[in-house]
Length: 398
Image (cartoon, rainbow, N blue to C red; front, side, top):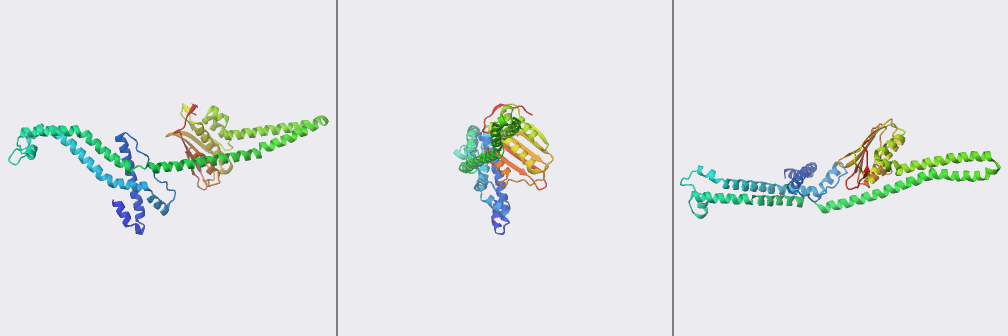
């Protein structure tokens, strides 16, 4: 309340803006504690809540934080929850200690001074002045309080949990945000697949297709010269075989970029090792995957794609002398980190290769972070969640 009052009263001179934001942040911290306490005591998960993501900075970012409805619900809960928590604590303490004191009154009531001003509970209620009867009434009342103590405690806990459920959760907003997130991920997946298809089509047109056209022409020439000029035919045949091998090599390279057989047969660690061996820049590998079931195919394909795309970008644009690749599993996520000592300047701008990589990760609800100041170094970090996906096969840690 002090932060809210100070922020509102000084809002006209803009000082109140950061004060209000700090107050809402503090209330968010209190809300986190209350949610955890409610779950721990009740044993039931609360419905989801949602805070709006703020990507802007400066004054616009502060205003955007003030526009978050859940933050104001947290503030309201902090205000209303204080008297509820205080009353619950006082009632619980008084009820429990009062019951215990009444049940054991025979051990301490003898020490009270029974002079002319003394009046027991029975005397106050019914006008009966009898110490023995007072002991019996106090004992019975204490037993009643202790018997009902769990019920009263549960009722107070339910009141406090109901207040938390009513103000600290917002399932509608969370589901709406989740729907938007899934729609964005679906669009990202479509865009990523479209970009992959365009790349494959371009590579096929510029590489193997041209070689196959030339191979067809060489075979026609070979057919015409086979009888009248065998020596020239042999030269044409040798050139045709060379172009055929080159076309096969390019097709194999393309297939490795889409879904390499080594990934399906031997797992992510071996596939990344093979990709690092093909990189013209020296690569240091640290691949630590747990023993047991392998991640789902979509997770492995995405992690492999992240590594190969990052190594390709390093080889083409970074002007680096070395690159390090670290792959592991932590907190139910596959983490991929690719760091190079190149010139830096990489970013996630639209139209750049890293933007397509971010779209590919968004399709599996992953995320991509890039730190690349001018002059380097560049650190690319990708996280791919394992939750909600199936697993298959076995993977040897490497």
